[in-house]
Length: 131
Length: 131
DNA sequence: CGGTATCCACCAAGATACTG
DNA sequence: CAGTATCTTGGTGGATACCG
Image: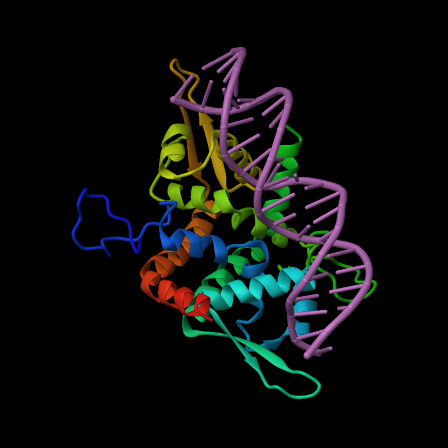
């Protein structure tokens, strides 16, 4: 199903996509994009293409397996492209597509917001934990 | 640690927060915010406060347990407030804080982007799956 | 360098039942 | 209505080893 139909017997699809609907494609894409590692990978690529190893080093804590999975998933969604130069030693570059760039830009804003709010966040947590 | 220190023996903290650093508070907040259910809850509250049951119905597929956990986590981060009216029958409202609203707004933009890109996403997936 | 394959531990999360 | 408690399982993701 391309978009959500809230009318019975709707003749055309494409009425309105809805992230809240568990069957909507945008919900799946949203979950893919906001995934633990996928979001950080998108973030890392905002400033330009990167190689596998560069990404691995930049995204602290990611394993090769998880990075590989995240890259495949994002490529599948059409958010990034994989370019194998077929050289020795091997060189593979990952770059954002236009859609990927749009999304990554929003994630960047989100991250900037949170980075700037670190003192607030820590105060709030401490207060909550103190009951 | 409040922010990341990339110099050895840095005398003051607060240099620069970095989502890529696994020990940075902003990374934890980022993961909390982009969590599967938390992000949808924030999204649902953009248009105003909601009750537990309303959220449960709007966020399709969420269980009471997961919703409860997500709400507690977001309250801890200071992104939403819980208001118990202490009445019978019980009524509890959840509303975004200013910071929560900022974050939810970015998530809204992200969701809008993805909802509008549904046809692209589905085409890309189909092409990828066909090898 | 840029990955894949396999094994396995752990925990996120669903189902269910119960309470104020 | 607004949750909490307990149990159970399947998938996530880390560790390790190996391949082009």
